[in-house]
Image (cartoon, rainbow over all chains, first blue to last red; front, side, top):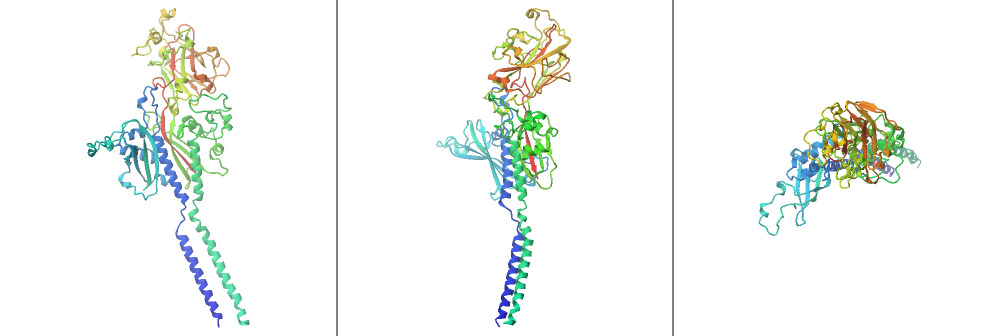
Length: 203
Length: 414
C-alpha cells in the first residue's frame, strides 16, 4: 500500500542527486578560476617596466652644470623628446623598441607580446588651466586604446626649460584675434614641470 | 509488518551506495577544482623575483658605503668598507647585495658593484642565496644584466652581458628592471701629444700651491690633484660625481719615451698652446737662466723613485706611501708594492706608467682639503721633462668622464 510511496521518493532523490552532481561537475570543470592576484601581477610587472623606462629616459647621463665645460651637451632623452612636441615617432621608437622589446634573453610572453602605448604631456597654460597634447601613440597595427583593455598608467614629471617647439603647441588661428586670451593657445615659454603620462596595454 | 522489516537494509544499501558514489566523485573533483589555483606557486615565484629585483636595483647593499655621495665622512668610520670593496677573506661581512651607487640613487648602478656581484669566482651559490634570495627554500634563480646603450661613446656593438644562476626552465617568476650603469672615470696622459691648458698650471684659480711654494720649478715631480671642493661640489648631481671614495682611480701615462733622450731644450709638449700668464709653467724643460743650472737636454732614462699620496698643503713627510689595493704597472710590468716604506725600489720608466687605486679613504678629504698623488722621478741631472699638476676634475680634457649607459636587469625565480 503506502510502502511503494517510499520507493518513489528514493528514486527521485537519486535522480536529483545525480543531476546536481553532474551540474556541479560541468560548471566547475568548464571554467578555470582566474584569481585576481594573477591579473594584478602582470599589471604590476608592466607598470614596473613602464615606470622604469620613464625613469631611465629621464636620468641625465652627463653633467649639466656650469661647473663642467661641456655642460650644455646634457639633457635627458625624455626632456629632448618633450622639447619637440612633434616627436611622436621618436618617443614610440625609444620607449617600445629601444627598451620594452629589447630583450636578448628569454622573457615571458606577456613582456614580449605586442604592447600598445599612448603618451600625453600635461601642462598648465598661462591662465592656470590644464591642457595636454599627444606625445605618442602606438603604430596603427596595434589599434587604439578603447579603455576596455587591461591597461596600466605610468607617469613622470619632466623639467623643461622653455616651451617645446612643434606644431602641437602652435598658435591656433582662431585664437589670434582674441584679446581676452592673449596666450591661450600656447604653453608658457618659461622653465616648468610637465607631466608625461603613458598608458600601456596588451594588444 | 514483518514483510516491511526486510526493506530497511535495502534502503540503507541504496543510501550508502549513493553516499559512497558521491564521495568518490567529489574526491575526483577536488584536484580539478584547484586547477585555476595552480599558479599559486607562480605568484610566489613572481613575488620573490620582484623582491630580488628591488634589492638589486633600488639598494646599495650592506655595508652600504656609509654616507650619501658628497657628504662629509662620519667621525667614526665604519668597521668594514662597503661590500664591493671588501677582500675575499672579508666576504663574510657582506650582509646583502645591492647594486646602486648609494641610497639616494635608485636604478643607477655602480659598475664596480656589478662586476663584483657577477664574479662567480668571488661569490658562490651559497652567497647568492644567503645575501640576495633570503630563503630556506631552494629557489632556482637567474639574474642577467645587459647594456642597451653602448658602454663607451662611439663603441658599438659593445656587449655588457653578465649572468648568474641556471638557464631558464619552462615556468618561472619574473621581473625586468631598466637601469643606468655608471662607469668609472680615468685619466690618460699621452706625453707625445700632451698639452692640457688647465692641467699643467701650478696655481689654478689663484690657489696658492703651498707644497711647491719653495720650489716652484720642481721638475722631478708629476702630480695628480684631487680637490674635494671641486669633485664634491654641492651644485653637481650626486649620481654623476666622480666619487673617488667609492670608485677607483685609473691613471695611465703613456709615450714617456717621447720626453726622453730629447736634445731640443725648451721644447714644448705640444703645439697650439693657449696664452697662459705664468709662462714658465709651460716649458717642459726650464730655461737654464731660471734654474741656474745648465739643463740643455732631456735624460736618456727616467727613474720613478716613489709614488706618494697626501695633502699638498702639509709637509710631504706626512704623506702616505701605501693604499690598500693599489696597483702600479711600469712598462707593462707589475711592480710589487709593500706596505712598508719605501714601498718599492726605484724603477726605470721607458714608456708607460699605470696606477690603479681602488678607492680613496674619506680621511684623505678631511676638511675638504685637496689631495695629491705624486709621481717622483730622479732628482739628479738631467731631470725629466715631465712635471706639473694634472687636475683630476670634471674637465673632459683632463679626465675621461664617467660614462653612463642604460641597461636591463632581469630576474627569474623558480
